[in-house]
Length: 219
Image (tube, rainbow, N blue to C red):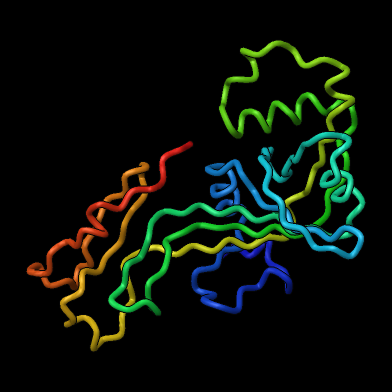
């Protein structure tokens, strides 16, 4: 395994076999998502806030209002933490303690610095393409006033870890004989797909709470 992004701060202690520190794995997860959560401390108060981002090679771009507290705090913070999570499905085990989530996540550690005004438009296009590729070219050009009102930060991707959980439930051996439906609810679309555990007795019916499971509709 290529540990080029590994450090003492990003080393995984719980379920280290799920961990990855190579840039390719980290980049693939970052490229599939577009919302991150940023942790930072401002005036002694910790905050974790969501925002969209864009990746260009080994740089993550963040943007927001030049008057906003978050971007100003991030620009002056000695250290920040950025996390991204993709939920791929629910892991429904035969016990609550072994039920879990199939996911892919990334944790980035470092600091952020302002992007020069001359480079802002390119950075904003990268953020836009992260959310809807190709849309930037169809929009009216951004104005100089809008660029002045917007802060764009860059964070170099140098210290990171990815963590991935896949596969069926991992029940206690004695629980496999219980007549309880177990498996995964995979999320390729809003309506998930129930996948029985390979060790499930085929006579155990699919329960209603699994068959009828739906993610909440967008409001």
